[in-house]
Length: 341
Image 1 (cartoon, rainbow, N blue to C red):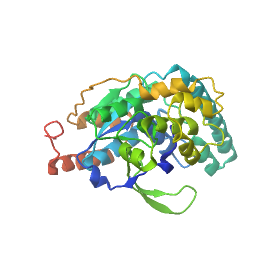
Image 2: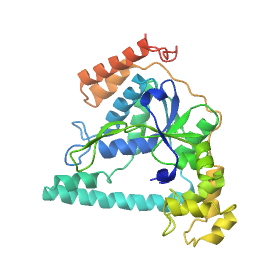
Image 3: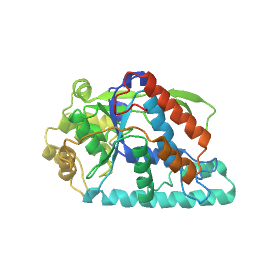
Image 4: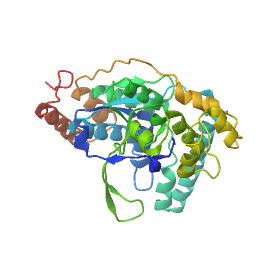
C-alpha cells in the first residue's frame, strides 16, 4: 500500500520524547490495517469476543493511543472517504489478493501449519464499515478528534499539516509527502521493542522524521519531480513502471520538468493516464480549515464498550486508563480540553 520510496528519502531518527506536545495527523486506515494484520492469535486468527466479533482493531486503538497520550502526543485520526474513480483497479486487485490469502490461511489451518497460517492471515484483512464505526466510537470516547476526509485520508492529513493544524503526518507511506505535507513521521504505530519475523531477535524501532524541505534540498527535487518518482515506483492509483525502483526513478525524475516530459520518457500502458494522477496529487479533494477539538476522555463509556460489550479485561483497561490520567495530571500539557477531573 502507498508510495514506497522511504529508502531514498533523507530522514532523522528521533525519540518519542521529541514529539511531546505535538499534534499529529494519523492515517487511520493504514493504522487499522496494521492492527488487524498484527494483533492476532498464534495461528493467525484475529482477536475475537465470545460472539465471534473481531476486536483486534479495538485493542490496537486503545493501547496504542493510550501510549501516545501518555507520552504527551496528541493524535488526530483521519479516515478515508470516497476513493477517486481511477483507484477502482487497485481496489479490485487488493480484494482479490485478500481473498487468495483467506484461502491460503484456511488451507494452512487445515494442514496444521501454524506458521504458514499466521503469514497468510496477515494478508487476509478486510476493513468493514462496522470496524470503521466501532473505531470512530472508541476514539471519540478517548477524547481523540476524528476527521472524515472527502477522499484520500493522506491528502487530508497533508492539508492539515500544510495549514499548521497539526505538526506532522504519522504514516508508514510517503503519500502525504506527494500531497505536499511539510513533515512525515514514520514508525509511530510500531515504535518500541519488536521481534524480527521468524527470528528470535528483537530490535528497537524508533520514530523517523522526514521533512519535505530536506527532500528538495538533499535530493535536488521539486514537488512535481517528487510526484514523478512516485508515478515511476508505483502509487495507490497505478502500478510502477517495470524496471524502475526508487533510485532509478529518482535519477530520471530529476531530468523532467513537466508531466508531458514524463509521458514522453516512459512507456505508460495503464488505463489511468499519468496526468490524471499527477493532478490528483497536486489538487486533491480535501476539507480546508478543519477545526480540531480534543475533549476529556470518558472512562465510563470506554469501560462500557470494551469491557461490558467486547469482553476486554476490566483490570487491564482500568489500569491503562489510570496511566493516562496520571500522565495528564503530572504534565504541563494538561490543557482544559485534556485534563481529567
